[in-house]
Structure formats: structure tokens, C-alpha cells
Length: 190
Image (cartoon, rainbow, N blue to C red; front, side, top):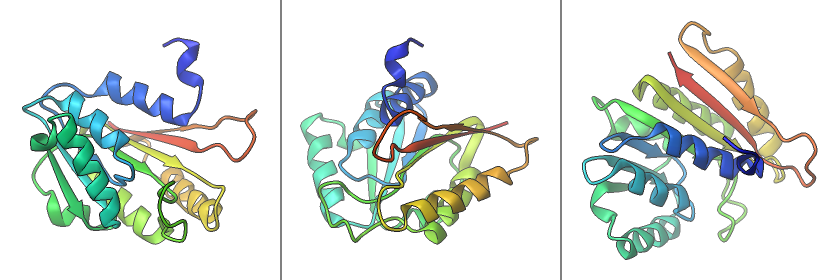
């Protein structure tokens, strides 16, 4: 890994996704948003893999669906109009290789619609149950909006208390960047 991957949390998350996912894997994008992670996941899992994408905003799902259709990747993605806290209602017996959360709000959407600590932690708990051995959970926590810092603190407290015999947890935080850069958490199931 060269220095160019330390540009920001988004690029670092992409690098981890590319290094982790193999064709045929199952992945989850718990916050579809503008569809960028969903699209990348769909490319990485290949025609035999699967991506589940969750969002509570129909415009995010519509935008992502169009993006996937343009790339001819819609057949490997199941978009779900529901919150990530309900992940276990849709996925049961499949072993998931990677899950990603981008907390906060949809940049081009209503900034009053934001992820909440309670539903995010429930979504994380469900996602951890679905991860296969050596599966990865990534959480990009944006703290520059109302409620963002509280959500970050609650998520970090939850992650700090995960059993180290079951999970390895890392925190990637850029300490010399201005304007509240996102913090990226990485969890590997042992």
C-alpha cells in the first residue's frame, strides 16, 4: 500500500474493499447513499457474488439503481428500502465477507435525515453476526453534523467493548486534517 491510499477515509475504505473481496463473495452496503460503494462492491463480487444495499431514502435507492443499470450490474445487487438496523430480517444463512456503513447524511439529500446511534449500533450488531471468519466491517463516521459526534462516541464505545478474542478493531483517524474528517473503523471477525 502506497501513500496515495492515505488521502482520506473514503479512499482507504476502497483500498480495503479491493484487498478483501473476491469474486463470489457476499457483501452489504448498509447505507447506499449515492451508490458509490454499492457500485464498487458489485464490481468486486463478480457475477456469482451478491450485494445487499440498504437505505431509508427512496431517492438514494433510485439513484443507485440507475447507476447499477448503466454499468449492467443490477442483477448482482438487492436494494432494500429499509434501515440497516433490520439487516437480519433480510439476510439469515449467508456468510458475508464485507459490510460497510457511511454514517451521517446523504450529501445531496435532506441533511435532516441522518443515521442515529441506536439504529446504527443495532445494524452493526446484526452485521457482525453475519460476517464470516476473517470478514470485515467498515464504518466511516462523519462527525461534522448535528448528532454526528454523539453517534461516533456511541459507536466507538460499542466497538471498544467487543471481545478481542472474537474481533480485531482498528481506528483510522486523520489527525492533521481540518473540517472534521471522517473516522474509519475496521473490524475483522477472527
